[in-house]
Image 1 (cartoon, one colour):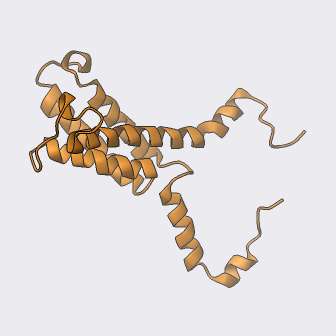
Image 2 (cartoon, rainbow, N blue to C red):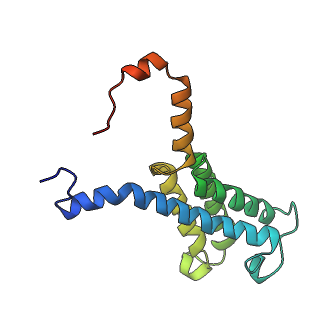
Image 3 (cartoon, rainbow, N blue to C red):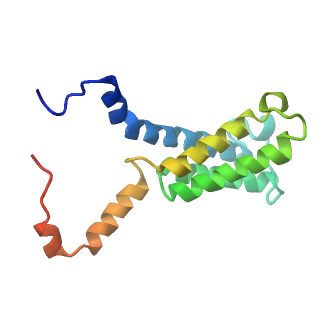
Amino acid sequence: MSSNVLTTPRQAVEAARPLVLTAFRIVIGLLFACHGAASLFGVLGGAKGGGTVPVGQWPGWWAALIQLVGGVLVLLGAGTRTAALLCSGSMAYAYFTVHQEHALLPLQNGGEASVLFCWAFLAIAVLGSGPYALDRLLSRESAAATADPAEAAAQPTSAG
């Protein structure tokens, strides 16, 4: 029997973990970036059903900028942990300053999206970008560029 065959559901789940984490990061980043683009450029329905947030307006324009830039960085997997932590914090701020004053629970105060994004980005900040991210690609390239060629040649390969 080949060692590549997954024999238990637990092994299948563990094998899927890196791909699921990558897909989760990409989807969350894309959705967040869309919120920012809607508020900044009036696309995808615009801010609050139409229009844009005035440039420099506190906190809406700055939040939209974090959403767009942070969402794109998380989507690409570039500076993932830092961007995700900033995005998480911005959503916690949004929840406590905009939604919480209306009611205690997110379902009552309209803050479900803020809470979900906050916790999703916190999970990404803790778990990392997954195997398919610019962070990983750039770290491999920089490691290869700084490695001693003689040392790299002496390392065994994993082919076969």
